[in-house]
Length: 252
Image 1 (cartoon, rainbow, N blue to C red):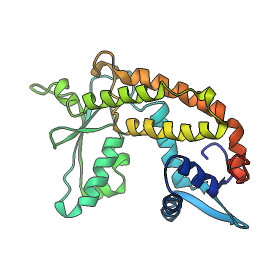
Image 2 (image 1 turned 60 degrees about the vertical axis):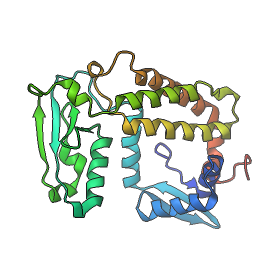
Image 3 (image 1 turned 135 degrees about the vertical axis):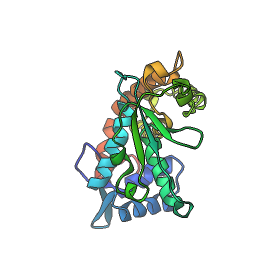
Image 4 (image 1 turned 120 degrees about the horizontal axis):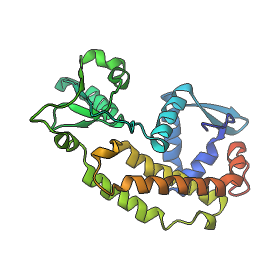
């Protein structure tokens, strides 16, 4: 949908989600909520329903695509960190969750329940959005001073758990052969691949190489992800047109 301006058949979305184990009523409920939140735009042609991305939805997906395929951390890191201190009153738990989610997505980790830290320079005002006016964050960019060490800051990120998750990703997807799948099954498998990888990308702070342990599995699994994505994309290509028209003989 990012690269094709044609509306996507709603029935096709429900069909793919069904292949992934999501019931029809649940899938249609999600489409309704996404439409209400202006992530997608709904319109009808006769009895068929089609969806396109809204400008808001396109921005969100582009951000996710960038993090999934390219990463956000610069490789020429100069040793400086961005430190963020926010205080959200107990009465605003929803806002606290929003701020934490946005910082985590941007690659920040929280040190012992206190300040948030991330290597490199970050535009925190943009990350937190207009809601920052309610919390008046304190942001500092610089190098840690003794007795604080880089190792102490890296501990803010659950790298051990993340490494295990990467290993599970590799064990699962090395067994998949794109060439053995039908075009529709390849499309469904690619949706599943993106879900698995985005789950990892969401929790991976994408630290500079010098802060990662030797043999960091994220690098190898990133290569596996891109290889699998290319193979599945090629295999699914003949199924795509039917999903836009809603007339694919694969499932109608």
